[in-house]
Length: 395
Length: 167
Ligand SMILES: [Zn+2]
Image 1: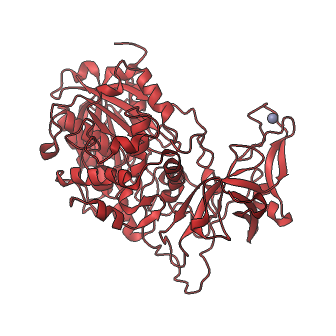
Image 2: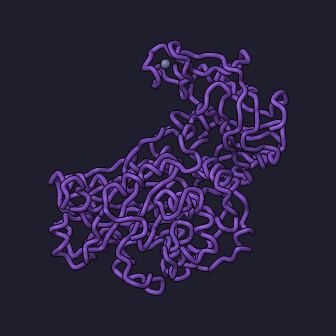
Image 3: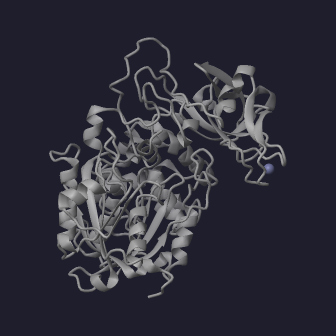
């Protein structure tokens, strides 16, 4: 192994996912336990083998369901003995937890790291409006205070500012944009765990209401209740476990841009080009080697941005690349967000994407299985100034 | 704002539906604006409107505008950065026309924009574009500031700048 790139000495060895729903019957902690136990068993390990935990963004005291479960609760529920743990929000997107685990394994602090992400947003929204910028009796502080007075109720509006600039600069057509949502709904129709499984047409897409230009309702992800877990193991251990190791071939973690939401250097592309460039600098593989893409899809435009930033097509040419959707379909040259993603399967917040990447690379995807035993997957997290990227390769 | 609010807003997806805690106001008034907590760095920006001034922090050594404000110039490393009145003119860098009625009483559609100030490329101010129809807003459109007092905050807003001619 090239010692400069310790990620190559780490592999995903097991995955787990709780039930995913628009209203769980179980607590958020139990969903997390379900996902964790499934992942540990899938890896061929036992609780005693897990000596690290990482998560993003850690537990918060929220009523929004954004991150109800943190490491202390899970460690106690499973009575794990940990050599190392790390949970926090100021990382290169949701995959920051994976990047932290790579460092911890390289530092010989642990061998098998349980990484999880739990959301409970469907249940939470039945009780309260998840509004980060307008809280009765309080005043906004920090970066988002610059937006606060402007009836800015949701991320859809903040990010629509970026997406509309992208539309202006790229000239992407609405019917091309629509193919992201249409393709993912079709994939979801083949995924028994997806929340919305009825395929949609172009007419359905355009009949969806406008949230904030250029976003329509089908461009927005789908709050849900669910937990996902993966096990990342040191490669020598991974080689002795039942699943073919899915090696972390390269990561992109940098922050070269102004990390301020109103002052982004690259409005139209968001803070992702440099992250993808860093990832490609750590591998001999090229975009043409990628067989599968699980790209962040909080909104459809994140996925469109990532198609360009990873170099699957040229800058501002994603519209023509997507075209009528055939290229990004399950049968196409770059199957994209094959579970239905956050738009249709549920907003599991990037960990749904890495779970699906492994499901496909272990040929467990049933009706939606991509042909040819795909062995290289590009995956990414987050939009706005935040970004993280990984290239996964099945050994 | 607490961390979970930040991260939630940063990586959010769709958020729909009315706010259970908000009164169903049947008048035509818009809902109250959320206001910033004033501190040493941002008070000039949010209160300059009391004197009809848009105040942006500027380096006394090299003239670089520093926004969001802090007493450090990233251009020359100067430590004499102070509020400075600017023209209040700028151009629409990007915008979105909001159609979702997030809370009862919210009049839609309305425009959220980022405006680049005339004095320096890359200094962007969030604001609503008012005194024109949403469909009249365009990329690069010249605008000028106006202020709306809410409690102790003079919220900068923008409207079309007739002096700049057609965009
Ligand atoms: Zn200076």
